[in-house]
Length: 275
Image (cartoon, rainbow, N blue to C red; front, side, top):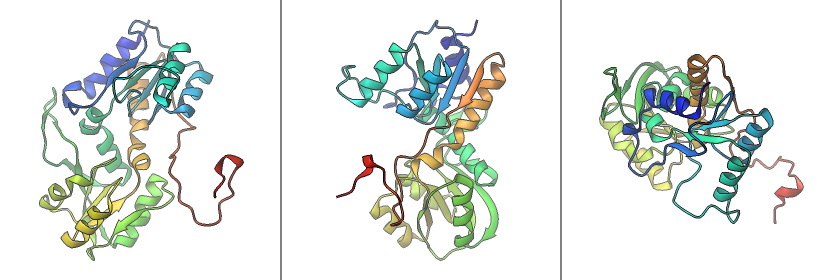
């Protein structure tokens, strides 16, 4: 019988807790360690769509990248975090997340993003250490692509990640050496420049950071938090299925980015009324 503890122990073989940031909440967010597992749902976020999907498929375990609980608090139905925690507990669904440890891990979030964009000769920028197999780990990755215009590379990013749109700064340089940081990694731009990259793909970029990129001569592409991190769900699911072939592992089909681009041609539902 495979238990929640077995799944967690396996996840921590490739995304160990020592790789996480000190503020992060990774591991088992709720549930019983000794609970048996026959079905797992993998999703980026433990949001309502994924919770309902896990219940519908009879999953005993939800595995996500982002945490369910971000700060110690009362667990009540008075806020979304409490309601989601209660839903999982009341439906017998345990929840495990691997967040910044999976961002940094070899083969994790940023290796998955680099692979999705077709980068070659991928390396870790500023390694923080090595794992038990001697592989370097750290937050960002950099790799090479065939020299192309920024316009052509923007289309590659949009198509590969399935984005509705991209925000970007054009420094006037062709694209050849690309750094990637899934999620909010724009604070690392100086490191990207120092490494010799001409282009940086990340998310959640602030106004002044776009200005800095223009001033510093860096092509900066904001492809969205959801879209830059979603590729790791496939990696997680494949790893879990390979390690536990007796378990049914599925990737959420209902997860989606809550942020949308308005183009003036969208039909709004009754729940999306605009003033």
